[in-house]
Length: 139
Image (cartoon, rainbow, N blue to C red; front, side, top):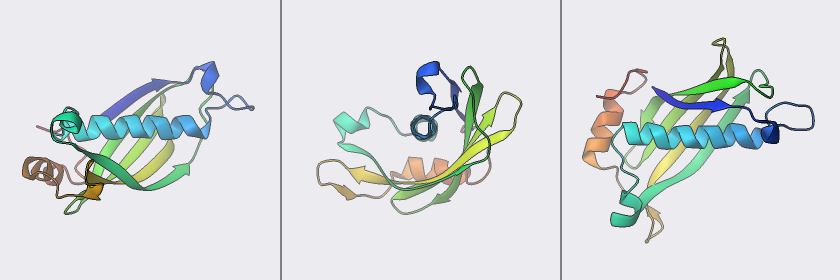
């Protein structure tokens, strides 16, 4: 699923004129929120239910650099569904369709008050399993 669109602004560049690593991570984080929302998570649950997400793994691979002015997009696939976690595979591509970076991200469904993992809600789990490595758009 397409999960993020971005543009590299001058303030995002490192000393060599390429997007700094922190902005790759920020784009992948934004993509995670869009992906879990597409799967059925409601960000209002943070307040109403006291439930959210805690990332426990980020594995990033950089293939090409993005320069100032570059447009890019992130696509997200569900790689694994656990009892209380999702493993997502984010792929960042430049405007030409070349993969510039990937991130494997494991995020745990979390009780924000108790500060511990909790099982994924059934409808979220079912939606995630239906899109397991499918790359398709959620229903």
